[in-house]
Length: 332
Ligand code: HEM
Ligand SMILES: *[C@@H]1O[C@H](CO)[C@@H](O)[C@H](O)[C@H]1NC(C)=O
Ligand SMILES: *[C@@H]1O[C@H](CO)[C@@H](O)[C@H](O)[C@H]1NC(C)=O
Ligand SMILES: *[C@@H]1O[C@H](CO)[C@@H](O)[C@H](O)[C@H]1NC(C)=O
Ligand SMILES: *[C@@H]1O[C@H](CO)[C@@H](O)[C@H](O)[C@H]1NC(C)=O
Ligand SMILES: *[C@@H]1O[C@H](CO)[C@@H](O)[C@H](O)[C@H]1NC(C)=O
Ligand SMILES: CC(=O)N[C@H]1CO[C@H](CO)[C@@H](O)[C@@H]1O
Image 1 (cartoon, rainbow, N blue to C red):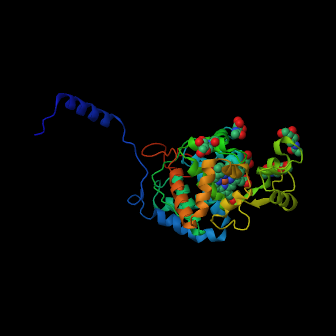
Image 2: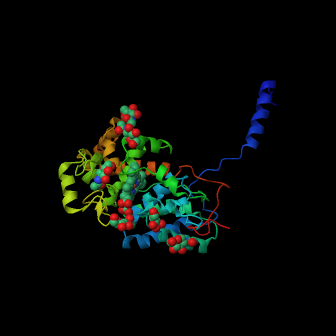
Image 3: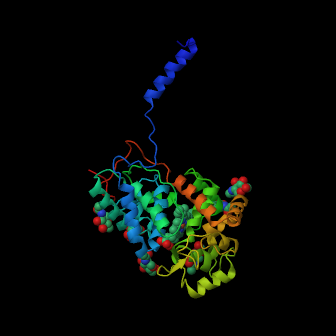
């Protein structure tokens, strides 16, 4: 029999009391649905593989959806909620979401999963799985997606504006916004690398970068390569608020997940101020140079680790939130 000192014994009792009074913190885990819905991940992957080739640009919007969801109230599918009619203030309706598409894609995956195992797989996990599978299906990196996220009950338009970084943010602001989600400068540099695919509307950057820098009519942002700026003005963006023209963020390889986004940054050819800002900080610039020295395979690996961290932001687990029946509305 182990002889326990009096102090140890008291300590032991206190520890036991604490352990039983703190609710066990549920965690995300790989294969969370392996018992409750064994085919879930396969169903998602098959659907993505079957449909993404019809629309490779969808992969870009789907990974962006995951990012926007995670940055507001955590990865809890709050972005998918429709307005209930008591005012029009859901994340979906906020300015940064103007161009997020793919809601119907998520809804179709959800109905397959509801048919297989009703009320089991959360919309938040569907977004995370779909984003990964879509990027993989288009030749991009893969990453681990631990599951067990629960869906949130609240969505607010105003929060999307304060939480999601803006294309005109400088490095300090970007670093702060990422830090508030537990992400560091390395994550910021790597995750911004998602801009190696996809497009942007002129209206989100043209006013400040091409037409009216610092409020001076006609001024072009001097941090932008002048040839690139002239080309954008001549051939792409017709005016500061042109919202019909879209521009590739990584010209020439917008469908290929590669390192060219970073080499363009070094040439002053980042499309947004937020992209170019990554070259304005010594730490961040060093990470860019490091990535460019190494292989694309290394970038894929590092990007995947940052995606996994992003997918854990303020997740709801255990008995928090709910598993929605329809992704666009809360149960009940
Ligand atoms: C660092 C801060 C970031 C800012 C300021 C930012 C801003 C933007 C903006 C303004 C657009 C264009 C939207 C439009 O035309 O309406 C865009 C597109 C996009 N963003 Fe970001 N973003 C950031 C980080 C991220 C991250 C972390 C990801 C994913 C991991 C991401 C993925 C994308 C993708 C794939 C697109 C193209 C979407 C499409 O083609 O439909 N962005 N981003
Ligand atoms: C970055 O932007 C913020 C907000 O607009 C501003 O307060 C700050 O002075 C800027 N920092 C730098 C270094 O330009
Ligand atoms: C930029 O890099 C420096 C040096 O690596 C770092 O200490 C600093 O916090 C970074 N952020 C800003 C906003 O300058
Ligand atoms: C340029 O910026 C200034 C200051 O923000 C603003 O007053 C002016 O209306 C802008 N001009 C155009 C053409 O957008
Ligand atoms: C695009 O711009 C036009 C003219 O400025 C405006 O009337 C229209 O509402 C805008 N469309 C969107 C989707 O923002
Ligand atoms: C959510 O809104 C969209 C577009 O307004 C609509 O098509 C969809 O049916 C709505 N979903 C639910 C569950 O109310
Ligand atoms: C997909 C979606 O709901 N987009 C909305 C984004 O916000 C604007 C208003 O700011 C709505 O008109 C869009 O329908």
